[in-house]
Picture 1 (cartoon, rainbow over the protein chains, first blue to last red):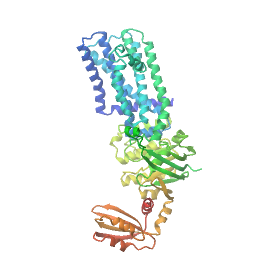
Picture 2 (picture 1 turned 120 degrees about the vertical axis):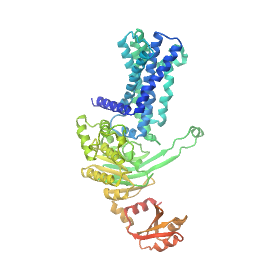
Picture 3 (picture 1 turned 45 degrees about the vertical axis):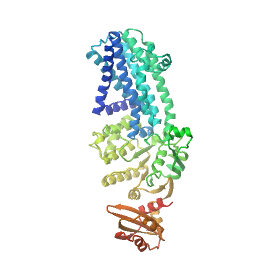
Picture 4 (picture 1 turned 45 degrees about the horizontal axis):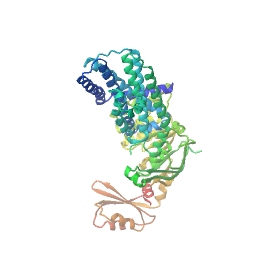
Length: 257
Length: 326
């Protein structure tokens, strides 16, 4: 109960921190729309229509979730380090993973906003028909994807506690994941050697589940795999966090050099 | 049993190597920040760690509050080893440091305390009362809804103290808490610390400010170059130099080489220079019975000399002597 309260309070206060900068707020608003606009224009130029445009809209919206979480997850720990609060988090008696989880959850929440706004942008500005064949499965697939991406962000964030430069990891993986998780182009177009990497990434299965639900196919297996991978990331993050924190205490990386 | 027990504590930092240096097998540069420090702090005591920048004060504190792993020696707080039982230590200690960092600037003072109350596992039903109590204690009642980014340095420092006390720690570590605070704020801070000690909290304080250490500390350990060079009550430390005297000379333009000549004079123990606007103040500590005023003035031949006076040594003189002795 007290852990649930901790997660809830920290999540709410982290959201408060993020929404209090006008500049950050404007970026959060414009960033996903800029992505989505470029993609919609590209698909239009290629004479895409019907399901292809819907697929583009869904892909662009998940891109927004991923970008809002991956780059900022690592960056947020660097921000905590810069402002001297990372040390206080580590010096607190609560388990460290429990303190990081709501931080990344707040980012995934902003990603969720990005997802909705992208779909609405596609509908009202580009006239993309959001004909979702299985709305309940669609919502479940979206929720599973947001949670799994949040967990992947958590794994990246935990690594950032040990390595001062790990914030760059978020930037490094941001764009490749757009491609290898099939946000924009089908996985079948990618080289064979990329497939195993795609399968190990939860957004691949989340994306597949969202598309399946939109097109009226069964999305149960995709959602299950997406969530299972999300749980695995959380488990790995929690397991390695103690080792990473000991490393940070040994190498004095909790503060900036 | 002492509340804090430190025995032969050592911490060495290894600087990171670039890829080329790694490939070439060049050894990493090592900095020995703390070299075999030992001391004990009793329950309800206010113990000071006094030393210049880079002496190892903060590193020692960070090992005691489990933020750094020692490379040698042992330390325990309230009977819990800082390495093996880190979580037990964290439950019982508070940590406050000086400066602008360590707070969420975009949150209000109250929200900061709510945030840290969760981190430090303050029971939900007690949080509001405890936060109100602490805001009152540090004089931030009425300003608690304002964002911290608009707080002055003194207000931030008071909020830091409130944060450090949220979970009623038995031991409080204060790392240069008065740095950058105005004299009125620093005085209020000292009275808050005194009140905490009167209430039974054990405090370990680091500071460069002699008067602060002199006023607050029951005992002091002077640390320099990672080693404890002296320890005792403020009176005992002063006693170490009270058998000598101090000559202060106001000089306009100390030429190169003067300090070396002054150090070489018979009976001179220490020589320091403080900038005072256009002038410099030479502070010369001497051995008991040594008359150094005339020889010092002779060494300043050619420089314009202002006021000259002799006085009894202070804790600051004791400190300067202790940390300047090779």
